Image (tube, rainbow, N blue to C red):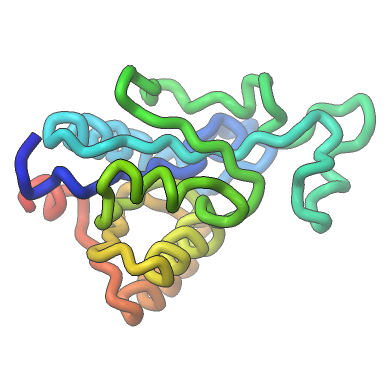
Length: 193
């Protein structure tokens, strides 16, 4: 591990089948296109000795732990999005949790909301974050704003390893994040850092 990266974690957010695959129950239009860059980000992070944190959504079969506005997606007898133990909740092909990585389950947009992420990162000496995954206006944005509120610095969002339903939505949210001091390099720029 290089000294430069020893206090950094890579958050890989919601790169699950239900968000990425064409038949995913909550498919993000731009999600499939970023898979190669997310794979590359994970590879680079591991080479640099950066802690990889897999942030995933998992809900119970009845959606009782989902937001109220989403509970209609979990009718009795029907599999809802990212239901724990289902194919939809699994990571998309090409992404694998390895020894030394960490998996964090969340049930809301922000990886910090009602989880132990902050204490886990602090206890591992992390004060800087790199964020990849989906989707920019929801889970990426909420997590990034909470990271800034918790004084992580720098917070970096790799622009071509994150995605939203449309490029306009993606760009508008990146603009907002830049305005609170978040770095937004491309994958190539981040690899060269």
